[in-house]
Image 1 (cartoon, rainbow, N blue to C red):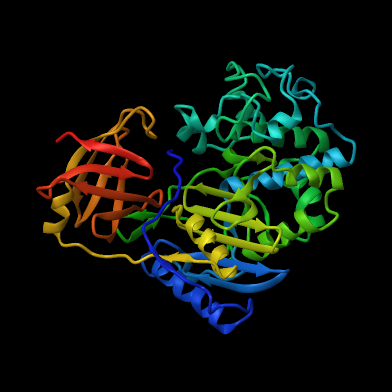
Image 2 (image 1 turned 60 degrees about the vertical axis):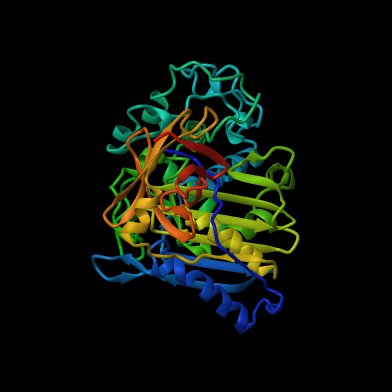
Length: 450
């Protein structure tokens, strides 16, 4: 999977008129902002914005199950993919607070079979600086998702592989395997299956009554959203079913928007963790740690703690701004990274800062053909030295990657599109004669080759 930054072509709107957090005008403006996403089938789910512990906006949109005509509501449970990591990290910190383990304990005491176990510490795992090979990048990862897994079986997939770098040296990419291993350690230390351990260590003490771990034994219900994925320019289809146990520790948790907001309050504003452990999460000296990205957000002008996640059928975004005490939660049962864009815009809106509103367009086939071509990117691109092609298919414009994957491009302006899969800005530059000359994808430029 590609991991891309979100930079969407949209219209900037001032918010000076919306000064009161609980005002009807603010809620109306949020509604107006969200409607294009909902109507274009790029968002269905639930949204919560709070300030100073009070809800500014809380509402659900679209179906939880389209085949059964069940609607999402504010207590609907959504799989939250990588946002799960912050719950796993908190469980480990609770064990540390209790004296069961220490941050600088070596992994070899609990998982001696792993390459480099004598070097990797619990701290390295929590900060995703372990150097472990990432299970999500293995050639047979799709097969892993097709079968029930245990923490031991997940670790076995990578335990014989050499470390990618010296533990603690750097953050290279999201380490899903590190959090598989943390789940294994939680089981070892508690003597409980991961789902039961999380209930005891996290969900019950934090008062999260609509949250849990999907270990493949969860019974489907109207309160559990079914996942969908984009099809074409505005269609949806059921997402491919996976075994969520294959994401134990790094992506197997489900929750509601109310529980997610309560979780933020619990982590940052309560005695759930002792002061030293909470300080580890608050520390912004490193960008990644303990299930959070953290640091100064230049757009919002605030220190920000956030996490996003995406897994088949679902996407999630959680943001906390401690100075104005703003929390934003966006949970969706559509496999689209639009949730991150939505979350940041709603944060700006709640602070009466400029935000961006998206406007989707439809183009005739003759107009779409004017964008057809093949473009060469350089070695720094997401797929190094890739040639990507734009083609007209099923009444829309698609981008074909060398991997065989295709992305549908949604028109949003003259020569401007959004990659529907990754919610990334795409621009077409033309030469003096009006023919395509270059493709700008996010911050990368590819030149026309044919």
